[in-house]
Length: 473
Image (spheres, helix red, strand yellow):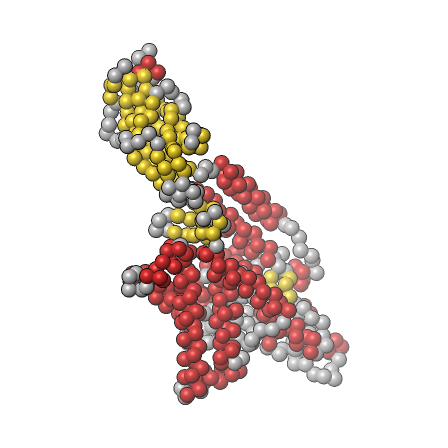
């Protein structure tokens, strides 16, 4: 694919020089049709990202990942530790979904949806263009001594970067502790919540470090998805690709000359203008072929199309295409591999949907108190003592809750009251006694089925073990 017989580019990174030092990337400001689409998608996702913690459905935060209290909300649907298996299934669905789209369309997630790319390219980089100018001006500014102009521009940029990083850290925190708690902390002030404020500053520092200095290195070095891409792509995957058959032809790429009959000369359509390289945010040359650092941002497509249009050559020299499409003009096919991933995804979604329908709003657990044997009561009744815990997963209180035996004749007695209230997004726990006529017991250990009622309506059932004498039969 390259003029060079060797693939030396695969032995190095565009962001690291031969001495192993950081090679700073100054990408040219992108423009074009695809960039406009990317901006639209990015702004929609940014609005969603910043608003999601403050959106509530039925009193539940739209998205919440409270690891410390083990509370999770997905699209306003609350999940508790008892629902962890559902969270695991959703995570597996997410992984399979990403794998499926990677096999079909390459690293499109990175260029269009990944928060790292969106913040870097659509927020921080655009601020940098606004303050320091485009590629050439940024390079000159980097080389010039620390005079008043450089201090003013760099200082303003770093201050704005820090403010945005602080804002992102607050939103990030709202996803983990809840927006209500965050707003309460803000109202009370940092002095009253010093530990949280220190954590907030640490997160701010991390975000500032990533977007002000580490930048594209996250995608190139840190992110495991880039490595995963290499094992998932095949020659049928649609990626951002350079059409080397058309770009190189018999005599390879060459600079454009106005009066030259390029088709007759045997030269390729690539005019070696380097615009695809200058606009790349990870510093690669897409003409070298599929590379680990490529995030499929499509900036090179827009840049190349603009140059092809300027020199009156056909566009789409760089485009979304598979290797088979470039080599054999083959169309996209829904391969057996894609069908397999799709089948797995559909099955997992079906399993999750079924489990969500079977999931109750109240979780009940009744356990026999450890170390306690049965007791004989009046009228030849056997008594066991239990602890219970009722978890309310809804945003409303569940009132007049009672526990009754379903499987056996007998009585359930709460220690403190006959009924109780389970608070919204909370739980109630305590101790209870279950008494059963000895004649109803068939062995030393029996399984009981207990119903949980609210306003005399059965809302949940649970089971527990009951100890008794050997047998009364």
